[in-house]
Length: 274
Image (tube, rainbow, N blue to C red; front, side, top):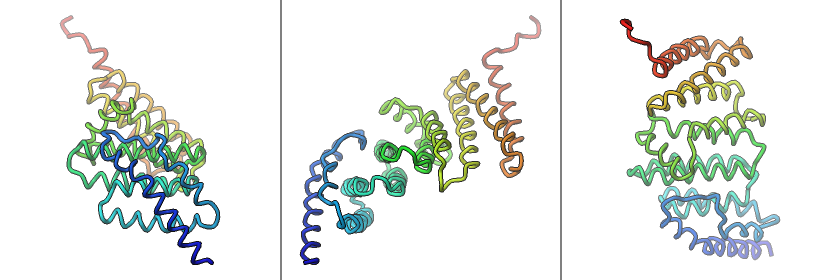
């Protein structure tokens, strides 16, 4: 009887995957993928309640690994969504899959447009996980860090392009989004990440935002970010005087110099002869 039930269960799984095939095809033809939209697979978990769920997850994880190795990314995305629907309150699922999409899969493409499509999909997947887990500080941190790291020109050749595309596709500023999720993480007691490290990341995010604004010629915004970063570091130093590893004083000194430089752009000194 147990063997028969397992056969029936596998049949249901395969039918579910077949059922979402049309959605997978539509993904291929969509220039910007938004996994926050409703799709027909939302009802699939209803077929898999009870003791079969653990077997279903194992089956789908094995299938996901195989599809990733085969570079069948569109089918992998469908499987990821099925896994997330079976384990919606298991943050590791959302974290692992979003990183895999935004980093590993995106890295396999050459054109910046294709890279961005997968980065954007990974970010949206993580955001959907955040919606499903509204009190998970660790998931919030990962999302905030992705919004910071994926747009860093030191590591990603097309980071400036990604930043502009995010504004066009979602109306978001990556630094503002990063700061939003990082600060939200601090409010929800993350278990896997050190609080001090997150606070320092907020400070660094403000600094990178200031540099980006200055590069883009927005000196007023750069000055505001610089002043905010200075306040954040001063608050950090007052709250954690025992932390000697962060070189806080050096950061504050650097920020003060930057603030003076930016103020000159706003209020240039008059020529000496005047």
